[in-house]
Length: 420
Image 1: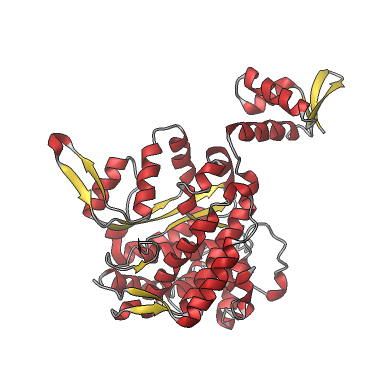
Image 2: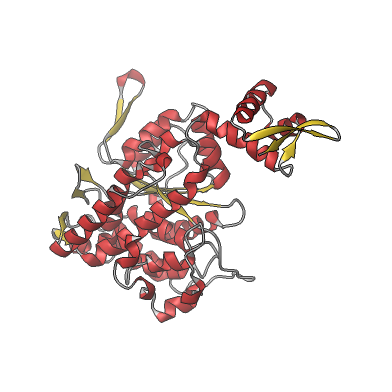
């Protein structure tokens, strides 16, 4: 992968930070499906608020380090001035949608979100938004506070509601908000509530079964889910007594407070010559990369997400806070590319659970039901797991039999279905 060639990726953590994070180079072998702690640490920039935030966060919880990078960037995004941005296929803003994906109850996703929320609450509490209950409510909230960060610890609830149809308009609205497009609603007596400069950032957490159950390939290939920076991690560190260490808390909160009260930022004019060469090499490599068909849309979205991350690093340790026009240099672009490579890796690893269509999802569920009984199950056992109509299940079973994925076998209690 390209990110391993962007400088010496195995030496990006200072010795002090490496001791805190608890990483050793020999621990990494590249075989894990989720992003490893070492891969995440290698994607950190050499300096800045996000780096120090991650070092602080790993002392509070055993959540994957990758989660802290995503949460830190999303918290930082809420402090960017409204006019901050750059020209990239139109006007691009620095707001960010980040989705932390992992095992339910195992990977401490909500704990990672809470670390960022606590610091933002101390620095600029007004920038923390509430869970969007309706499209109208979100527009009204953004009309009052155009820049805000909404933490969502149970994103599966949102996906379930959207699949049921009630939240479908919310998905459309959020897609527009990610693009920082003006939004409005017409109220009673034709009164209009309009938000010209929405800058909504979302840090959300979702368990794998919800993504499998409530998203399809069409959601990822260019729709709503294609706008999220997806970070799939797995807890590796263990701490029997996570009492925390708030040594850096005040500094982190103060730096956020300074940014949240800074009214202007330097407009990004593009890339330096060195950064442009690095960008072109990576862009064309991603554009030609062989990817699973159900997530092929990330070819188009990944570069845009990368530019958003670069804007955030420019606001973190780059020249943006100086107020003058500036260009993205290699020191800002390199960690942005590294992080987006981990986003791509996360989606590739998760592509196996993303179904092409509803029938494919149902077929997988039937196979998983049979697997749960050791690979052989009768119809009653399958129905007890599926909890759906008998006719639907038998039609799927007939199809699987025709494809020789499943065979009918005789057992001591009658006929059953066995995985081939």
